Image (cartoon, rainbow, N blue to C red; front, side, top):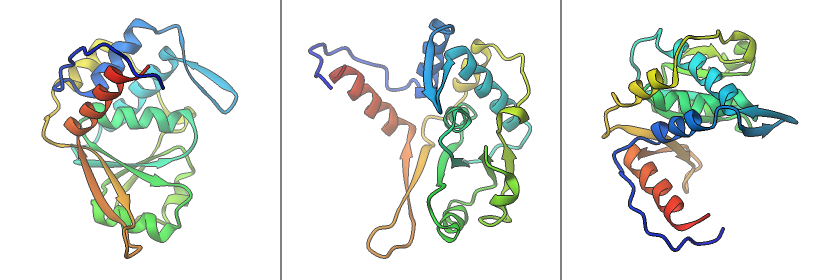
Length: 196
């Protein structure tokens, strides 16, 4: 990365999901992601994000939502959708043993988990949380516009958490480290202001 010389000031109160959706709005036909030998445009990603938001809006408000992190487009879209509905994103690593993911679910009090993996497989890590399929064939086409999703992000409370990451520390037991939306915005602002 090359450091930029400009020192433009960003508004830290704008949630990162809003900035992402503004970018989508301006570049719908451009390629946004290349994964598993396939290109996805911003429009493709938006349709998936809107489908996930639509599924999440059918449930009562939750503070945190787990995402079983597979290397696929649905997982990337889920991380954005979780932020749009105002919940904290809790990553569940596919390479972790089931016992570790189970402890993460318990400690973060997850009530919802999104997964593009077969749902039956996830019964091994939780019996408390509702597991929602986000596989490509399970998502419906929605009539959301980008502006409608932008309006959802403006309703976010700014003092809540964006992400809860789990570390092992010295004990080997998972410990949650919450990051606020402001923490995430400062990080991205610094990156955008200082690097290409």
